[in-house]
Amino acid sequence: MHGIGKRMDTNEFLEQYYSNYDEEGRLLTKHGQVEYITTMTYIHRFLERVQKSNGITPLPRLLEVGAGTGRYSIALAHEGYQVDAIELLQHNLDILTSKITATDKITARQGNAMDLSVFKDETFDMTLILGPMYHVYKIEDKRTILKEAIRVTKKGGSVFVAYCMNEGTMISYCFIQNQIRNCMAKNMITEDFHCLSKPEDLFELVRTEEIKSLTQDLDVHREYLIATDGATNYMRDTVDHMDEELFELYMKYHLSVCERQDLIGATHHSLDILRKG
Image (cartoon, rainbow, N blue to C red; front, side, top):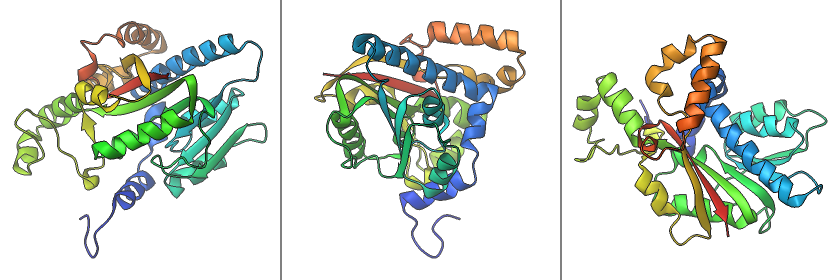
């Protein structure tokens, strides 16, 4: 049981969780690949835009905040991009650094998403925040993370921010897994069916209107808000058992509809793509 003997803080809950959970393995399953392929598709699209605008100057420089075990950072470094990776948890950072090869242009260090003071203003062409918002519960902390990411991103550069969505959990966990009454008994659900999270619950769940409100008055405009896995997690077994041809067709379908705003709220994971200035 959490908290026996002493009160655990947020970092301890996360350390305990990620030390025992194969997050990278999830992204390697077929259903996990949907989120990964979708995110990388948009990362590459925006990096190509930077490269076209810069001509033959050096490849774009990227920052990943909350890089985890390096699924994205290492892949992008292998492609030749200059990458800085910040990760809060030593367990994850150790795994990330173990994957770095001699030819990778990547610097990995321990750090907090709310304090990027190690970097100067307008250092990066792209800043990725693909995990931290899952575990931040206060609006002011979320806005601090966004402000720091925007500060270190060049004018005209992109900030990618991933979120866990409320309705995906409501439908999959509360109703399909029949946990709704248990959650209500623990006062974890509001009258309008918004999940209430604490650090020991590990994941903060949001709705699209909350995502949009976080960037009010910040020096960015929204280019896309996309569903990175869409319907995938409602049909995990089906997706995992697809042959390669069927999975390729499913990805083609998913990428054709992931920008549809009428579908965003029901995805499990979303990606907010912002442009600075």
